[in-house]
Image 1: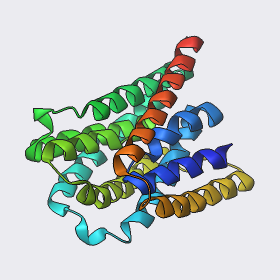
Image 2 (image 1 turned 180 degrees about the vertical axis):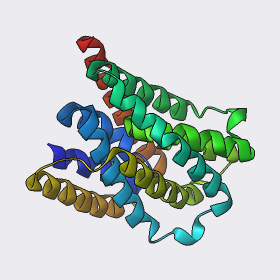
Image 3 (image 1 turned 120 degrees about the vertical axis):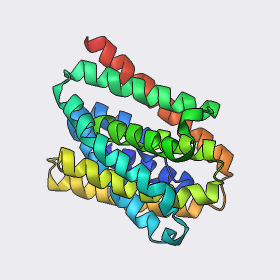
Image 4 (image 1 turned 90 degrees about the horizontal axis):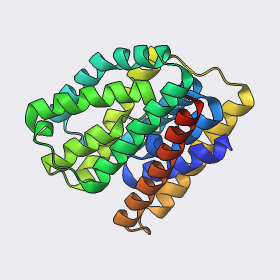
Length: 234
């Protein structure tokens, strides 16, 4: 099951430049628990983003990415602190709420004046860093920033990979590496490799809008399920 979750998340990440955390985190949290689920998502997403960045690093907008990443580095410890102190049902409800709200904002294409210019980059980076370390989902604020900045998708994807590489590295440093058995690690690695192959093969065949909608619908379902489990346990 874990390998299939990683495979699905990896596939959509390669298709759209984001989506691994949105799709995989709710399922990983339900399978492994909030703590291990988030740190495994951080580790896997960081590796996937680093691999994706290898082919598009020249398209990275460093002027925009530097303030995003610096702001994220400042808020990652706060997200880790919050996640370690919340009871599991509360943490599940918190994660489910974050995922659900983030997905709905992205689906609606929300235009937020606060996410424009240099201040917008800092705001998006800070929100992304906190959400990534607390709930494993740091991509939506950056996606909303890119939307408000008018970035085309071709430019967004390599920048999303760059941001994901850096922020997940910070999150792994703050949260640590998940304590999993060797077979589980092998299953996760196999899922990442297979997902990369499937996502790369589907990219030229699947219309971008359809792939993005599928990712968001899967993420919305996962977020609502996680929220429901958290509320049930309260």
